Structures are given as structure tokens and as C-alpha cells.
Length: 396
Ligand SMILES: *Cc1c(COP(=O)(O)O)cnc(C)c1O
Image (cartoon, rainbow, N blue to C red; front, top):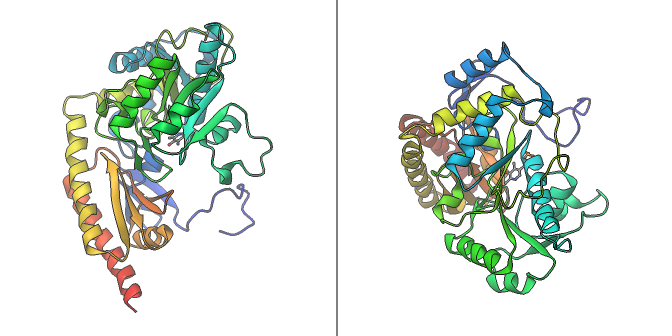
């Protein structure tokens, strides 16, 4: 990238310019196809240009784009009702992004205790390797020094503990604890799975101590792990949950879901948003659910997940100099590398296969949930070409 770009220097873009997408493929200016195992960071759950989403967007564009929260919206009510019907939740607040959904989750938890006569309960306990967004509060929640450095005082009220350490957690919970916050699978942190047992332990600890359990399912939600939400694998329901990414299928929407009790402090005027819940976005959220809630959709995700997982396990066997581990749930899989993950990603891109870096030197695979077995076979072919090339340089 040349430094005469007018885009902030926060991102480093590769050379390719993509012009259009269709399903799991993106096409560059030459018409060459790339297999997209990024889904725009687990966002385009139904792939690119899904006919039902495109039609919904076109139809909605002729009606109402934006009305703000000054007015009621049947689309908003309908999406909220469907999300509640399908989950633990009774109440929904719509946002434009994941970080805003997290902000709402944090505010909801603190306000719950304030309203319950325990205003001193403000601390949110989080876990090492977490990622909850890039706002000032969510970088404090994530606790990663690389994201906090240089941005002034860290927002107060966040305590970070080692990943998966029940004893440390029991010792840390006190009269100022408001909530525990966790991703059921750490996405940015390197596809680290939180054991179901640990999530159930968190639920028990919350119940025993009168504190709230918050899940960040911004990356793991909306079918990504083979359940509508990843927490269903454990059976441990949260009180509050942030979602985004997949629910918009590429349209920027997010939501904070809560039980009626947990949301009791969020009364008129206590929180707001200008764009959140706009009719255009809501119609697309509903269209995503039309597809994801169809009979057989999640079964398809689980079948494809098995195929992808087998392929990646084969790569681990075949290239022991490159990989040391494969891990993940559903169509959110990661391979921990022995060489820099960026080397693997660059070789993959050369062979027209797109993946994403994650923490802990992991290459992340998050293909659209509509990927087929035939397309996964192509993923495997291109992966083998890329890895053979790396292996040849390692042998020299
Ligand atoms: C992407 C992500 C976020 C932040 O979402 P934005 O829409 O980028 O604000 C927060 N938490 C998790 C787990 C994520 O994957």
C-alpha cells in the first residue's frame, strides 16, 4: 500500500481489488475467482449476493430506509420477537455494530444492579485472550495491551482473569462484581473453545452470587458453530448476549439480547441510538433468519463443519512442519501455525484461497455457512497447492 492513501493507516490492505461476489466466491478485476473463507470476518453467513437478501434489500429500498427510534417499526418488532423466540431472551436493543451491542450489554448489567439497590456492583470480569470490540469500554473489557496502549486511561470496572481458571474466578468475585463476560469460543483470540463445563460453572457462580452472565456471540452466533448460538452446545444460558456480524449477513446490524429481569433498568431515556433498528437493516436481519431458521440449515452447517474439520486434520498430519494444532467448532475453525500465520495466509491468497489471521498465530477459516461439499473440495485443493509451496521452501 502506498502512503498517499487517504484511508487511516490502521489497516494494511493486500493488492487485490474485488469487484463482485457470488456465494463463497469473490472475483477480482481480471475475473479470477477466490474462495472466501473469511466471510468478511464471519459476517456474510449466507455468502455474497444471496438471492433472498438481495431481493429483500431491493424491496426495502423502495419503502423506508430510516425513521430513527422516534417511531415504531413492525420490522424491528418482528426481528426482536423472532430472536427472543429462538433464544433465552425477552428483550432486544438493536445497534449498528458488535462493539455497540457490547456497550449496551455492559450498561444493561450495571444498570440492573443499580436498579436492584446495589450500585457498587460495577465490575465486569473478563478472560485473557478476549476480544469485545474497539470502543474505549470494549478495549478495556478485552484487556489487550496492544489495543489499549496510547489511548489514555483504561476505562474502569473491568477485571481480567486467566482463561478457564475456576479458582481464580471464585477468588475474584466480590461485592462489586456485576457480571462475567465471555465469548463461548474466542474468535480473535485464536479460536480457543471455552469448555462447556466451564460455561456451566460460570452459570452456577452467577446464580450463587446474584451476578449476571454476559455472552459475546458476535462472532459465534447465527449458526456459525452449528447451533443458532454457540451457548446451546453447553446448555448454560446467559442473562445478556451481544450479537452482530452474521445476523446482518453483510448489512451492519447488531443487537443486545437480555432477559426481562436483566433489562429491567433500561427504562425510557437510559440508552439510545440514531440508526439502530432502522427498517432497512431490520428487513435484512429478518431475511437472514428466514434462511438460517429453515429446517435443515443447521444440519447442513454441521455436515460441512465435519468435512472442513477432516480436511484441516489431514493438513495437520500432512504438514507437521507448518501446523501444530487444529481447533474450532462448526464453520469457525483455526489452525495454529509453527511458521508465521501471515506466511500461510499469503501463500493461500496466491492460490486464490482467503483466510483470516487470529491471535496465538492461528489461521482462521470461517467460510459462508452455505458452502457445499464440492466447494470444500476446492478449498482443500487450493490449500494443498499453497502448503506444498511453503513446504518446498522449508525443505530448501
Ligand atoms: C467482531 C467482534 C466484536 C466487534 O464487533 P464490531 O462490529 O467490529 O464492533 C466484538 N466481539 C467479538 C467476539 C467479535 O468477533
